Image (cartoon, rainbow, N blue to C red; front, side, top):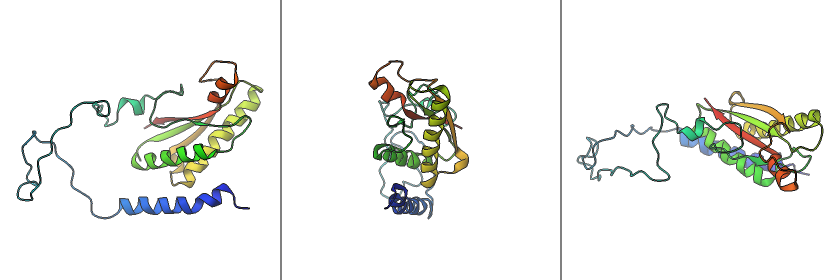
Length: 191
């Protein structure tokens, strides 16, 4: 019987090779902002059109002085916002669903392009069960996501796993819908 990890190993290897190939080779010179309509020295005589400035819009916002948008550094631990989506778990489980694996694969790609950032993976549970049991289960959930990301090429030094058990629910409700939202791993990004 082939495990999920064994089945995904060729995909992870191919992804790693693609990332390595993309990183190598000749580097392009940095883009220098100029006044709109004014060609740069590299544009002259090469038939390139000057680049028009981008207008502000929903997908374009100013960056802070650190070079990162506020949404990346101020994610907090509330389960809301941030560049990395939460992943959900089944009741009393710490196994990754296909949806969670796909989300973690997107996270690994994002982390490869943001190599100066670190991630704390917070394991959370619903309110059922003892404090001790939920802390252990939350730790298992955080660790399984951490190990999966490491398997996809993210450096272990950039990933920290912690458990909050049932102590920080995203949804304070006492029903199956709330419990399903609270069984999660949340990803907090920092420098």
